Image 1 (cartoon, rainbow, N blue to C red):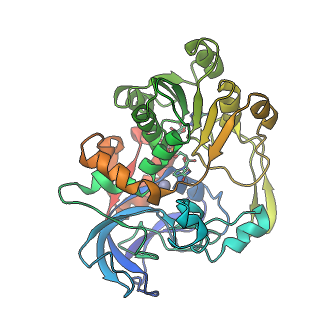
Image 2 (spheres, rainbow, N blue to C red; image 1 turned 180 degrees about the vertical axis):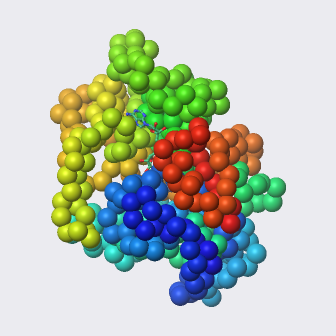
Length: 389
Ligand code: NAD
Ligand code: ZN
């Protein structure tokens, strides 16, 4: 099969690999019809996630047709059209049973690496380094899906691939980011980042009762979509002082909740520190956590901070004193995709949202290297890339 593989910083190739096989009775093999490049893939593209190896297959947002199932997979049959959550979960451990799917204890055989370095043990993800399980990803013609009796959701007739693909990650991620804000009717929510995650967070914040959403970015096309499609008030952080504007727009109090849909690689950020497992050394740059600091300072006293944007490692310089002094609640983490699938699929089915609104680039798997570059550099007004196999 053909698949997109990682060969180092900004080195993406499309190569031929052996087709995946069933190796566990709970596996399924999915023939991918549509897959996407995620903001999270950019952390791999820019070489910031340790334990990637040459030839690793990328991609964690994908859907397609079931072409083989292990004998313990009774909920799926050959020919079913499915969307697959990017987080891999066993369905039987303490965390899965408590609806905390992305914290599954059994889906990452390499969790010990992260435990040793950072003191926590993450679940497995598709196409996202060896410390997160070493699973081959979905930017490929075929994927082996572990715990297929738990994760994939069958797509009803009448919905196109583009309408449902983002159930795999960014729609649930935006939704959980808004849900984590514990929005009360009429609240003001500020969202940093109008990328795919931020845009879904804006839509979801209104859906959950926000009276006003203020969205922050610098790219006109992203701000335009936030304004015109998602009905947010927008601020271009290169043109205005964000903190001051947010105070002015909220009677001097600050937003009730603030969402950081940017993460550690924010524009304007220069500090970074992570342990490179391959090189066995601590890598240091300077000053990350830049958006998170702004978020904490901007939020009203007693408000809620929600962080879907990815942070890793140490030295993020979080002003925890300000967060404590203001009595803030901080909620964050990898999305519990499984928790949201039936609910969000219903929104799409009822026509409340067509998630394909943010697709700007449609391409083939063979063009993946160009598409990574365009998406990373936000060229050509790129917001979201989907790749057809
Ligand atoms: P993206 O790169 O398309 O969007 C990020 C946006 O943030 C861009 O539009 C950029 O201009 C904006 N931005 C950068 N610096 C900023 C600043 N200083 N102030 C305001 N905006 C700024 O990525 P995306 O796909 O939308 O993903 C966003 C984040 O969410 C990433 O960190 C990604 O890894 C993370 N993510 C997390 C989960 C999860 O499970 N928690 C899932 C998917 C993605
Ligand atoms: Zn993703």
